[in-house]
Picture 1 (cartoon, rainbow over the protein chains, first blue to last red):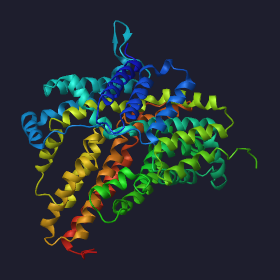
Picture 2 (picture 1 turned 45 degrees about the vertical axis):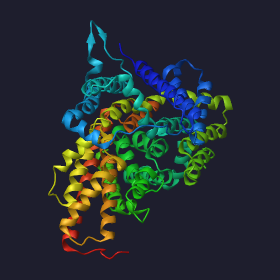
Picture 3 (picture 1 turned 60 degrees about the vertical axis):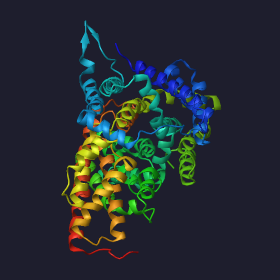
Picture 4 (picture 1 turned 120 degrees about the vertical axis):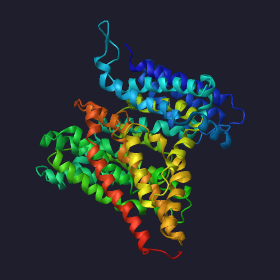
Length: 315
Length: 232
């Protein structure tokens, strides 16, 4: 049986290899810090479940400190000249899309059929996190196919992927950290506090009032935090679960899906979401740093209204 | 007051808001706020660390995105982006609005099947969508002003954002969908990721209709020759 730990193990080994490559990069501007960051994250993946929880928590704090103090930087990398890229493109053509397509197709196949697949009476895939198991296997399969297609040595290909890992950098960690923060918020009663602060103004029996509070709350909180993922646990725990799902018997899948997308309308409006709204303005050499937000609000506001209407009618 | 709920934990939220507003590193802000919130709620430092650790282990699947990097990097070094560009350049003869509309549809569909990393501001908007949009607009209005060009570029960037945001949520292995699923599971509600992903479709259709209408209105604006044309 294939369980999620085998996917974590592969990810951990890859990150440890990246840490080793960073350590051996003599021109690296932050050789030790970057290497320590990837090695720690690799260990969390590889053996995280055996590490005592308090030690693991301390490792998370160290990871955040390394990222927060600018210790995680890009190393030195060679770029492929554009003539060579054109030659490669002409040689491989549309076959280049094949490995990229393997990832979603295999993931979906395992997610949908994986739990039913049995070999001599034993399930092929673990029933917990089946989608992630499929995703991990899909990435590995796609990598093998891509290496064969391009006739690359797999080890070289892995080593050179460090340039992309460096480009994404500590941002890979942010979704995990935000989910972790959500768990802490939940345990500390932040959802209850938000609900207690907001609820006196909401008529809990009015479906429209609760839907409005949740959707507008998601959008507003996302504008403040710059990230719908950060707003989601707080608003959902404070408003959606007690008032909509438990209070009015609404379908939780519909409520959270449209609630999150209401938050995305907030992402379109906020300079806090710098990588989506401010960075492109610089990249496109626009004189107004808020030009992208100006181009987006006439879409974001009607769409938020549409989300409110959808949530009201569908749940 | 009927319910005696402590409002102190909201300080953690305030910390996040302040940290982001002061442009501190988000990873640092998030972890520090987590530590502070736990302490304010009366946990011991060791308890807070244990809580961070166990929550991190439970949520570490959100970092599995890393596994796509070796594949994408290998394909990019063998001309994946050039081939995508080559394909899209076959769409010549389009207007600025229709070109962005086609991009919006492609971006939404590709993100919905998990290929959101095929696009993006540095990868496709700056080298591809923005110059192609400007080139198409030049045929619609020969003396295109600088203000027009900047408007079109900003619209191209916004098209990428709208296409990504309202497409990726339909992909079942997307971090956001999994975050929603794990959140519901934490609260004792079992829902399949596919159910959450499917309920993203109505909003995705609305996003396409609203933004698409604006893109086609841009074509009419360019044809009429009104709007901001002076160089500011």
